[in-house]
Image (cartoon, rainbow over all chains, first blue to last red; front, side):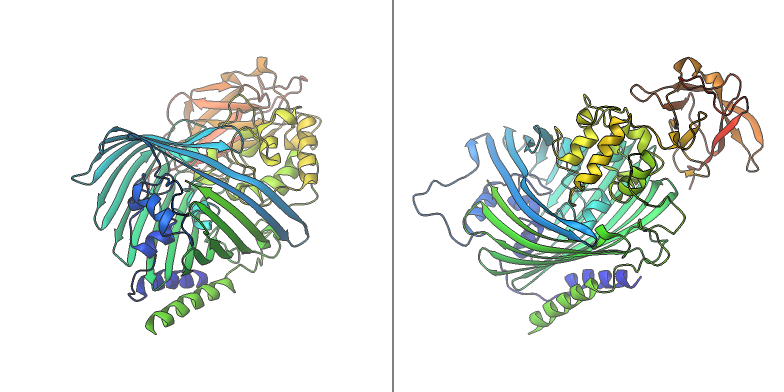
Length: 363
Length: 273
């Protein structure tokens, strides 16, 4: 298990790096800025519609160039009680794998619209995240949230993304695929959250993705994050009770700001009784370094590990990416990257690589 | 300087993780399982077993398996047939995941071709399946989406798969047992009296405790049988037997196993830690 020792060292390195002055919404931005997710997003657990601070940040801090003076400023507020936003992503990619023809794909990856209705200011809100394309419109998140700003807690009910580890933009990252909790798997239930100056915690009771087809069973998910200015550490756990077999996931994640570099790491361990052969133990690790070398420019490196069955030797998979993100003007981002998969030699797809280019427009 | 050293150290660890961390694959098949433990790949042909071995198991079940299978859809070798053929899609219930004879209106085909009414093209995050692979899968659906054993056992009705499978240890009492057969069942032959679910001892001897069940053929999947215990199964070992008289039969009048009883699955329920 030397791979897991290395992954553990990566996590420790993220924690152990030194203190440095602040540099500058993806998780790495939160780490670079020392902010909590709720600082920039309407949703306390991050992702989706930005709040006033997040919009101002997106317009003034993230891009290389500001819009010309006199250009209309986007605030997100349509009415005093209604806030909206959107996210459009198109991509082009070329994938190559041994013994397989190379494949090019291009097109619209997603078009989402967000809305937040303030029913009772600072108390009761209703949030919607709707996919408009590709395919027919489909709700991702829709929930009501009652907050007590004075004491920092909230109660959310409806359909929403569960909190677990880093809420990465890349839903294909091993830690997101293997944990089964990502921004592709909204769940229905309730969430009790606590947002204190240095702490963020959630406890969720939901249906569970695996139980959609049978209509019974449940999932319990919890997460606690301790957030300091230049580092944070969190732990998360999830238990799914299902007629197909129970599943436990435990995760540890950390972030550290080192000068202009943000370091992120996550380790997830899974025990799943839902496989045909019985219990299987899996593990996944993730490490990321983001270097915002100039305003509007970010260079990202990621390295990932995945052990699909810890009782079997020689089956581990790895994945790494090099990615450049350029945000020339507010609400527009270009991403170009290379991603390499490494797995067992007899599986061609586990040894593919791809080049990709993405255009993202978001409000 | 300290900052630089630490960043370099972190990036060095990142680089180290890129080399030597992928498994060598020694002793494993192309799906990363010990050689001989699961079906092999072979050439892709328009029959279910081949599609399972070449597509569902190596590609789809990377995500669609276990206790976090997206949409609850498990495409592992034991469960896939009974969860797709004639079963409504959870994302668009008006469309069957696989509609035998009609690939254009089969949700799974739509998803791999990238024009389903909902959501992204599958496999998610990976390259699309080659056109030749999709063509073979369409052919299988056009041919009636037959289960695996049809070609192998043309002379009689047989059980293709059972869930829980023989020897399986389940940690939550199953609310339903699923059987799939090599041919479409004659619904008139389906009755609780055609089978017996009983608790057995560790040596396999009957404990004389028969569990009452409800038996149904799911709508849209006439080759499957759902066995629902009327009372929760407690911890213990269970055996499901299809009885020879009166026996199950397919629409061609072929009986399962002649007049003999057929043990379909023996499994252990173990909810206590």
